[in-house]
Length: 264
Image (cartoon, rainbow, N blue to C red):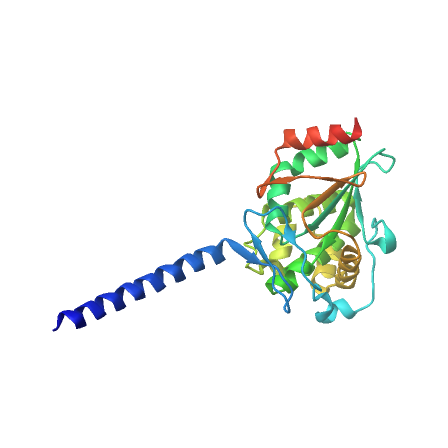
């Protein structure tokens, strides 16, 4: 074999290695990102980012159940019963929390600082208003966000405390954002079993039949009307709190300090 041919083969092999390495690096970068844009304009959110970017329509209307009659859960608050309020109604301050049950940054905040958020509400420092969304179903595919939200509506119908406990269980057991495990009603009901007294006959029936799917769609519509562009977003008396730093949730101590800065 001529030296020229050997050189060409060597160069070709080198080129293939270079291409393979570039593809591997690209794949690795993609694994560290999550596609969150709408179908017409994908938006990439780096894992080191500060929030899950809100994409286009949630696609909630695509489920047959979402087109059924609107049933608002007992204990719902806000415009059209689209808000869930936890804490003392006469609290002097209001903490607004914007989340999607499939959002991994929301999970990080809830599992890191959520207990402190609740403790401060229980102490009367503020009441918490949950504004929930289902946009990640459209951005990631599946129906986990809206199935979980509809089930949360069924929990809210049982009581605000039941909603809060179920909310916490969902985040404590959140699947990988690329998975649609929350879209499985049986899985949702299994998780509901972790909340004492939640799985009443009426709760199970509502979850299986999607009774609150139209409500979940309405809740998401109200979320879309807000000025929130990413989840989680947390506001105290209208002032946005920086609850994520370099993609990591603030500590309970940091969150408490932020609250004191606003409430005095």
